[in-house]
Image 1 (cartoon, rainbow over the protein chains, first blue to last red):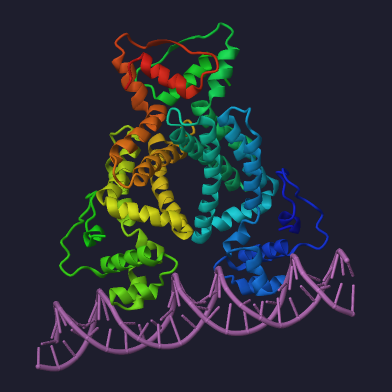
Image 2 (spheres, rainbow over the protein chains, first blue to last red; image 1 turned 60 degrees about the vertical axis):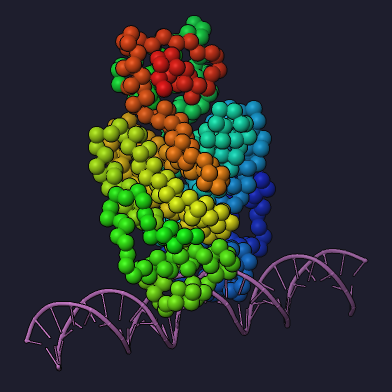
Length: 247
Length: 247
DNA sequence: TTTACAGAGGGTACTGAGTGCCATATCGTC
DNA sequence: GACGATATGGCACTCAGTACCCTCTGTAAA
């Protein structure tokens, strides 16, 4: 575990990565905590153990991390802020594209520190308390995406419902790709795995899919297509895309 | 809060609802806890308060509930078991239909005790700890659905990915409908709200949608349709459905 | 009837997370 | 040097959750 894993934050939307002349206590604590968690396990490590290794007072830990779990995910707050900022600017993007790109910000945070991310993934898988904590983090991302989509879709056509379902789909697809990469030990191509997973969501829900497809079909607006009886709808969609040369 | 709210469990798949001659301690505890949570708040109520009102020893509380939060959701374990049992039998249903019906089991648990469900909803909304706990419960439902879909879809065509995205969509749609009903104070039609929400998911992901549609179009397999440039894919799907007389 | 046993509940003491309060640096500023 | 602000340490407390052991009660075998 290189100590810079706790210092450098990559999605680089805000003012991160000042060289940090005195190794801020937050990072010292996060590193000490994570090393101990790897050595003896999360539940077997007390906050007293952490502050002892970090050489600081116990009270200081809770000044920087509201709970022991927070020390395992020291970067999500910033990433969430970046996502919010990104979406605030994303007014001209197609909505599903926008939230897909927003999800990619999270992926980039993980893939920037593969070793750390993989170790954390294995740790989180083992500890129920960390799994629950991670759920609450993921939920905040999902609500951020849903809030954005609600704003874009407005009240029309079950906008709120559509926003929530799409947000859930994007998060599920993103996490599927991310976990595939994490299970590989950080060896494969994380971007490709997530792009592939998000592609399925974009094809089903995105308006860019049909839009650019129609544009790329020089003949105009008429689509003629043959569908087999009993074909599932997602396959029909795939078929439309292949007919009109999408993807 | 009628005391039967803690006794009668409705989705009735297993051996529930024995009259319970001596008011089992688990229900006594759940009711005492819930009343206290409503009176003075969740965090302001200690386990000692609960066992004092229930007139039992402190140790007994943790024999029936692994944590304080569990006392707020005393019925989910059983509902989860019912869902698992239901899906184990659902081999002939179309997969998306099956998980939609499975989700309706959860809804039925809520709508069986409207007053209790609405009070719990308001309580959960206020208490971060309960929100997090609820997330972990919802996640278990979602994983149950995803596991079933994985089994149905197999390894082909990104089966695992599709399973997770659909499970997430179904859960999101279900929760949207459920929350709509809960926010209404339990006045509206819960089934209708959830059916409507699940309909959107079924139309997009279900194979029954395209299947029965193609079947109902007497002309055969050829679908001719006109799509406007830049139309969103979900609207294209809607259009296909209306063209071939679906829904 | 006595004994053995099992299962439900009660009691006590302990660990450890998280909080509130106050004391103590440390640092820049006037 | 005085002063206020911010960062940190120390202490005491509450409370959730657990380990261990006790009592009681009902039941079945001897």
